Structures are given as C-alpha cells and as structure tokens.
Image (cartoon, rainbow, N blue to C red; front, side, top):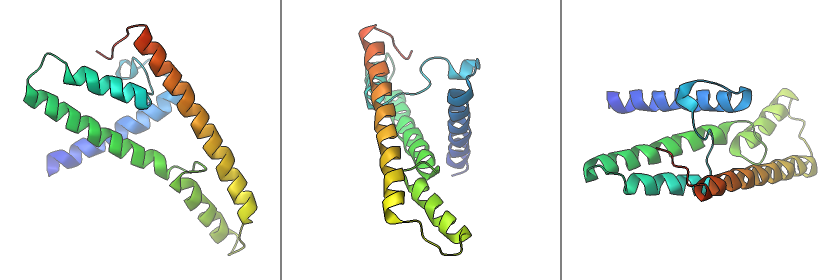
Length: 142
C-alpha cells in the first residue's frame, strides 16, 4: 500500500509538471518527446510496449502502470474548471454559491459548456493529427 500511494503521488506531480510544461514550455529532459498524446498515441505506446524486447512480466507491469497513470491523469484533468468537464460544472455551482444562490441561466451555462466542448474536440483533433503524423514519420516513444 505505501508503494502504491507513493507512486500515485508521483503521478500527480508528473501530471502537474506536464501540464505546466505544456502551457509555458520546458527544456526539462523529463518532458522530451511528445508532451501530449491522444487516443492514437496511447494506442501506439501500448503497441510498442506489447512488442518490446522484454519479458511478459515487465510488459504486464508496464501496461498496468500505464493504465493507472492514464486513469489518474484523466481524473485530475476532469476536475479542472474546464467547461464541458465535471470541474466546469463544479465551477458554476461555486459561482452560484458566491452569488448567494443566484443561478446562472441554463442557456448561458449551456453555451459556455458547448464552446468548451467544441474547443476540447478541436484540441483532441489537433493532438490526433500530431499522433498520426508521428506514426507516419516512423517516430517511436522509445
């Protein structure tokens, strides 16, 4: 249990550092290579792990660690105050509390979430194009 807790905390710190690095840029060697990957990149990474020259035990441990890292990273991103995600909804609830119960119109909140959703889909599309481009160029994660 203590090892799992420590590794979870390491993933939290790594996720925070990766988000910061993506936003402000970083020359830290920890973040060399693609700073973000989408579903295509995750598939590529999983495939590279599966065919790596390593024992089955090492592959399983690496894949389980990857799954845990992805799960925790997505949970963190989901609670950020980004429209269309859970954190965006929590933000609107907090705004209502600060405004002493005065609700924001559902139409306005819906519009904010719609725009946030459109931006997220656009971001996912850009990241997916980068993933496919990396694969076509023959670039690897390792």
